[in-house]
Image 1: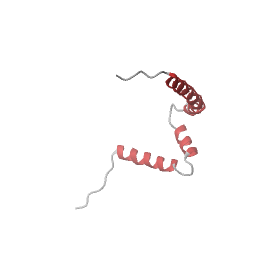
Image 2 (image 1 turned 30 degrees about the vertical axis):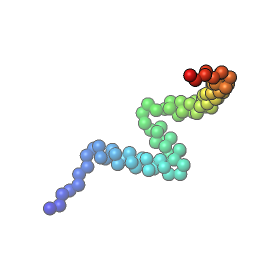
Image 3 (image 1 turned 135 degrees about the horizontal axis):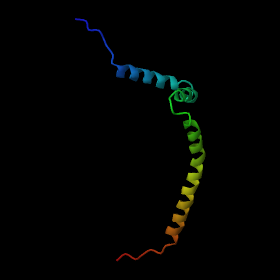
Image 4 (image 1 turned 90 degrees about the vertical axis):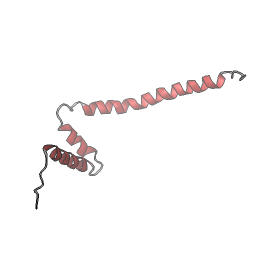
Length: 84
């Protein structure tokens, strides 16, 4: 008995999504991914938001490094309490 293979709408969307992922991995994947992302409704502002986040990451890391340095100084200058 031969049964015809049928696909559900969910399976078709999944296959389409898999194809999009494979296409976005061509080359460095960035340009293809950006073009695909730009076609999604409501995502026009995302690229500028991502650029802003990328610019702010070093500032955040500098702030964390400063706090860590202060903590090291604090820990190094504290007098140890004797253990009883």
